[in-house]
Image (cartoon, rainbow, N blue to C red; front, side, top):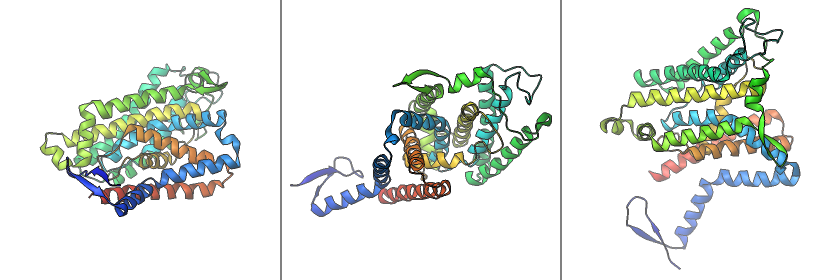
Length: 356
């Protein structure tokens, strides 16, 4: 039986497939989706070894952990669409987490970093961390756009700068680098409290905040001129410039928006962790980058969907939770995480070369 398919390179053109062509197509499909296949197999194997893996509490835990990482992943995805990356993301999360904690410590806490400061209004603190993250993102975008520096170099530099600022911040008022804890109950209830239960298991409030961020980022990427310009610049900056797109402005805005997302992540992490220190946010950017690549955001630029980013975050979190259920050594988990990034990038590049 002959099968007809439309050739992507030319609309209205068809090709008749023989058995050899079908085998090649199946082979390509298997290779391109190998990561998903392996993840499904791993999930099934984990369940056979430990039935608690798919329990209600475990599923809610996976959703909660994923929700905490969605803002940073959505932010860093934009920089990848521009064929770049952001190595400063994790440190920005750490800085904004410590800023949030310092401004929302209970007034009765003995080692409050700002003893005379009352508990700040939560909306004001959210605005502050968004501004802090946005400033770092703006700096990244400015040096990438105006000086044509590679994002890897720029964000490596800002990563070190932000970490230095963080270290000095937690030394203020004789705190001497001690963890910032003793958070006010209003802050903890706002982030980690629960108003909805799933089969008796509380769902943290920040899951709903993540849903709002997903909807917002989907709208920005798909329904605004900014989103269209971002994909145009990521696909071909020269062609975008000729078409009237302000490449420099778009690059700066993408990085600034990414920084704002890091600030929101820091705010959530501050209450979720409860005890914030210099290492808060360490390597968060590697998880976010891996999630983006798994979700189909291509490093060749101009390709990606928010739905894919969210799916990538969930898939990566499922892997990490499965590794814990299988009692895999923590050190080995780093090796597995790095291998996932390599495989995902290799598959992504292979797809790009096949399209060419």
